[in-house]
Length: 160
Image 1 (cartoon, rainbow, N blue to C red):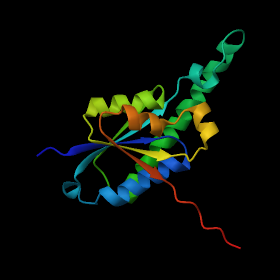
Image 2 (image 1 turned 180 degrees about the vertical axis):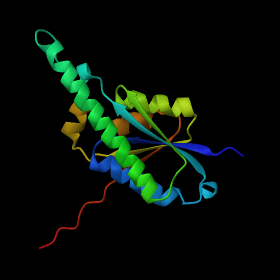
Image 3 (image 1 turned 90 degrees about the vertical axis):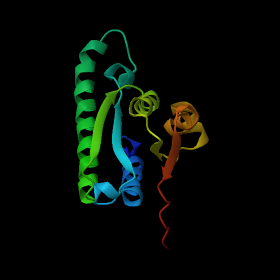
């Protein structure tokens, strides 16, 4: 019997790495045959022009540097994901870095892999920041063709 596919969306935030770690703890075991899911980890890398958001004179000179930095970030995110999987002895994992808006990239990955579950972290933005930036988790919850689980990082205990 084929396993269901679980897509986990990650970026370079603590929230998404927490979501991946939480998912590995709760859904995967060191014995791949015991896991109900095939794991696909997706990092959406914005294009340099999208990240910079500028056009006109001088833009062409800046873009190669931005592109280099975005590739470094994507590489670091993928490496950290591999480390988290290795620490939990999860070896059967597919890692994908896709250029594009995370909302579309994650929904496309769900369709491509025929996933039954999408996991994303919650950045915990307030209403104004969420309205300006747009919420990946909100978008995916409404547009992904599968169930969506939003993993929230717990608030730290305040000490006196």
